[in-house]
Amino acid sequence: MTHVLVTGANGFIGRAVLPLLAARGWRVSAVSRQPHDTDSASTSWHTADLFDTASTAELVEHLRPTHLLHLAWNTEHGRFWQAPDNLRWMSASLSLLQAFAQAGGKRAVVAGTCAEYDWQHGFCREDITPCAPHSLYGEAKLATHRLARHLLVGTGTQLAWGRVFFPYGPGEATGRLIPSVMQAMDTGGPVRCSHGRQYRDFLHVDDVAAAFAHLLDMADDGVFNIASGMPTQLRQIVLTLARLMRWTGTPDFGAIAVPADDPPLLVGNITRLRATGWQPTVTLEDGLIHTLADWRQPRQQPRSP
Image (tube, rainbow, N blue to C red; front, side, top):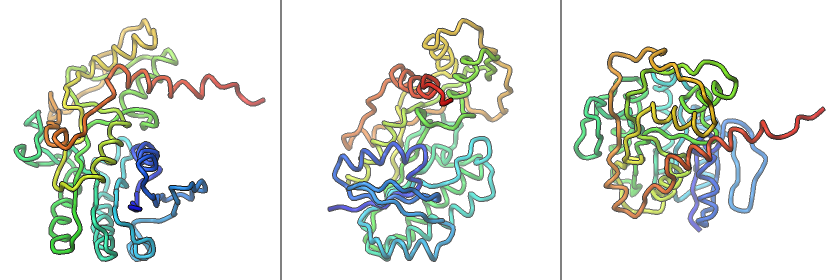
């Protein structure tokens, strides 16, 4: 049985990918910083601090997984772009990949980011669009990828790098666009937004998870955009949520200032990943309906006395 070690298993994407791996017959070793006590027939949980590289290497040597899915990184909303610990994550990720290769690992799949690209190009394609990050986060991810390619030369370990664009869905951080708009509309507060004319590439977290599971199954290496390939204006997101929630107010477009270097268009070309047999399956409308239903669920449950 193929055996995959998943870091960031309790994160936004990690929680979505674990059931997919179990359904595909993988033996999963899930790593989280916090203890987790719900082992199953296919998934065993392990507590680890990836910054403790010696202990992490011992865990990898003990488990000796055939595959690695590395999702863990600092993604704290509003802070991760310039957080100093991006450098620690770069170092820890390289140490993890080195330990994986030394333990005989065959294929590593790592979560990259669209922030590695030069955003002034709008449509981003892996083999054409130059990389010129505008944040410490993007620089650290890009450097991790470049160094990892050199680190793994001659080891027999493949590396696939999935550049994620704009994931959304159940479990998304509350400060991000979709959860914050739903919260404001639900409570009757003002819905404050930027001008909303920017186009972005939104992909439901279930499709993101399916893309990473697919990359584990493949033999191709290199960089793959994980995106919908479709531009969606931020205004459309807000107005669709208003319709779905039957909210009759008026969004305050322009209330939040937009940085001078904010790109008007940022979309991923997904030709390369489509060619391997993967494609998005969740439409934006269905994805927002699903996200809203999940967000409302705990509010519909009776409170304990």
